[in-house]
Image 1 (tube, rainbow, N blue to C red):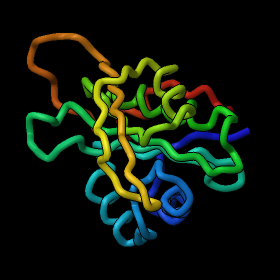
Image 2 (cartoon, helix red, strand yellow; image 1 turned 45 degrees about the vertical axis):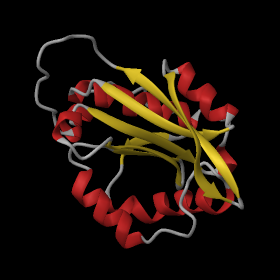
Image 3 (tube, one colour; image 1 turned 90 degrees about the horizontal axis):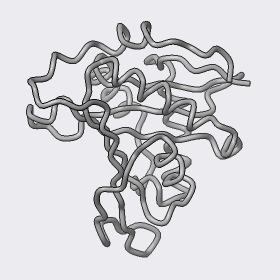
Length: 187
């Protein structure tokens, strides 16, 4: 059983440990050397107000999901990129799906319109997770990343959260939005 909650600054070491494991052992994470705690803490400090990070924990952090800006230009402000990583001992136990459900619901409540997830190919499990939540493949970048002595393709999956042609409303801070999102309790 595990719980999901908004991540705090103090959770960054545990989140980074999972991310760095994925970078060292998989092509799913394109980092080619361990990333620094200072970099993750700085990024979290700059973005967490409007781009939530959630963690799943039992006695320790077993996974995380986060949103980040899709691009730097202001016209992209109602879109974001999402990612989820789960500790390898907790794969295939519903952790990633529960994290993404909480993240997606929060992002919709905040006022985002479009979510994008990049998936290094092939990755049947990640594709299945994204598609089970309504994401649709919209792009494939061939030979976009060089890692583990070979080229990797990356596909992009998109989830449109709302329809409408009118001007969007301002994005609500994630803490306010997350507090209004129903919690299922323990998973």
